[in-house]
Image (cartoon, rainbow, N blue to C red; front, top):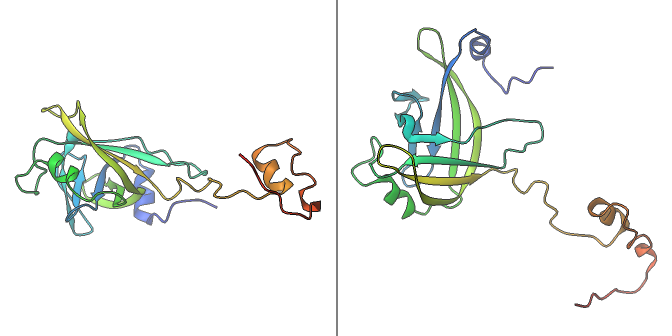
Length: 193
């Protein structure tokens, strides 16, 4: 059984070529939405224009594994100049003064054929914004916005409660026999500080 993540036949064929060209497109659901790409030109995908940010857009590496361990991702965007197609106000001011917490972020990789046409795309990451802050060192003006995101799997393995039984205790503290006979205690145990 192959795991092609629902890729179209054309995209599967394209990814098997000797040379594969792709760029990432990013949708940040803040204000009326920001649509950016790290491509050197604007990309139109699913009828939406993603504006070329080029080296003004920096993404953490996205690696997929079977453990769903992509818990967080950082996106850095050059921040002094206005974003293409977004008016005259600096992006850094627009994002930091907006209600950005828990807003969606989606990163899609768009693949091209040998003639330069868009074949299809695959969603690499989907998450929510945790924080945004001013950063330095990106772009010609040296200022950026650093957006910290996390996805739905961040707290997946977190234990939200503990049970006073041996099975729960062994899961967290293997070999600890403190609750081995807890089911035989018939009275309520009060914990003191």
